[in-house]
Length: 461
Image 1: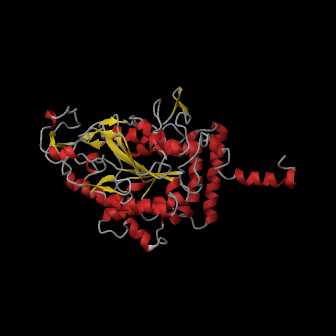
Image 2: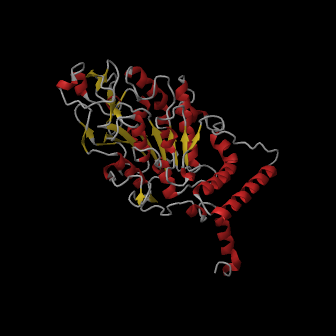
């Protein structure tokens, strides 16, 4: 019909669309869910600000005045103390930082985050987050993949599997490595049993971002000739052995790598960014790790503009450990906050002034929180029983607080949120019903939320 109608222009258009992987059957062959959005989409993209190590909820976004009153007292005489990672428990430890209320919402934020505090009315803070694991590696897998087991698909892989990428010349799932690879390693960003083409691509926030982005051949034609040879060899292998994910993903990666030669240098170059924008992000900050994270945040915004679906930012190495302060809480948390505070606020404000925040879901989370009592004299141990995460943009109810921990900031006691609920809500904002985005593996239909998860409708606008 398309060939015979309108002098064949319909067939010509179809042929052109067939060359675009966003419309071609190649994605179906690679295992794309093909369900598209199930309902109204409010978030087209995700920027995940991963706070490696577990920030302390009682020192950031969940003030507990009772810690001041009972500072230095034996916690065991005040409440039931659960076994901790190291069981080197000290006394109740008051927060070294003061809280103030910000914005029209009156959201309490500690002095660790003066810049993020200025964006208080854009945040939806969840104070009743929980995890099933008190140890970094398992908790990281759980946060990233919905399972404490190694080898499951990451959030970014699930999102791109379900919705596809809007960008043909950049990966759909990018990890901007600030200097710290989380415990659990690259499997936190892997594709698991999903096709390998959905795994995260790790970029550095400087230079060309990835190695070998420029061709080494003398001419474009020489490189194209090599690619043609590779296609012929791959075609021969396919004719002999049939279609396999490893081969199909390799072919797609070759094609993507060729396209990235032009796109990556352009998106990584910050030379055309106005000076006031760079300053707002913290590119001129005295602290070198602030400059590193500022570059990550600014590149993330540029990648969102280019259509990258899911971007994760890891933390810089501030030499004082990640947010994992088992000792020297004050110095360690201040260094980590100093690195990320201004860049995060710059990102939120920049997205908002470009009218992009409404379509971009920004997520701030670590794998667990910290205890309200000391480890040793001046640190805090791991606490999976109740901690804080927040979201902004992408259809969330801004300037709100959901859930609560007890009066010590120890355990979630109101509107308890599980990791699967968190993932279900993120997918919902992107138009995906988490129960319907599945992949057949090991004899059953697998999903990011396993067999659990409820959307937290109270944090959705």
